[in-house]
Image 1 (cartoon, rainbow, N blue to C red):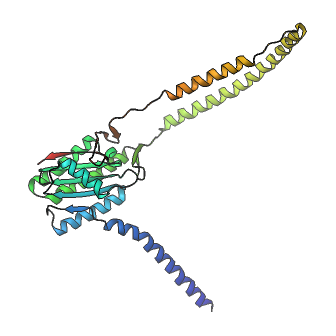
Image 2 (spheres, one colour):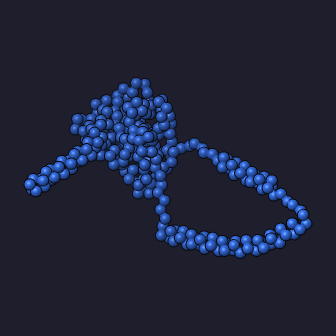
Image 3 (cartoon, rainbow, N blue to C red):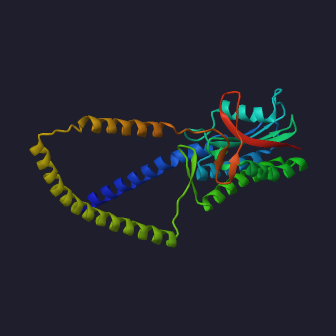
Length: 291
């Protein structure tokens, strides 16, 4: 009886672990199965397309940035930039609140390659990083090795991501924002600790001095109060105090509301990125090159 109970428990635990395993695996499979290579110009073989899909799935999972590769031989009268931006927006691509991601376009109609960035992709891929990606992609399209061109650009994006992390930048995938981590060197940390100790010591000394002053002022105040009472004089400081308090409040409110923020280029781990607005009203960065 005891052995049967143990066997039942063991089988139950095994099924529980299997259920948990497949539950965790399912989102990853669904994520990997999403199509991200759109070879409308028929430039890739079936094997090349499959390999690019595999590379994209791996890099997307690591970076939490959407990646899309598109080829076309019919841009419909659009520039490479407009075609890339619209394809990204209309396809609903992007990760997180800012639809972060990168699209690489091989445009056989305009004979151009183009990198379009959105959300966190804009901040990551500065103008100088875009030029590096175009340097990676150009040789392949010129020699007819289109899959190699796309693969090298994808690898370049991941390399840019890793270099940003090595520089001390952190990426929040949900908000699509890169932030610089704050690190204190041992010397700076020691200096900060020393400053804190000095400030604490000063505060203690100030409190003691304040108590001494208050004792002296109390004695003087009692003497002054006695003189005033004896003379029958009276003073009202309430109105003056209220005026001073109101003035202090007004001045503080004015100072706080005088700040402002200006627009401009987006800056990130590798420098600044120029941006523009697509026909759909979304903000994009990126750049292109003829071949």
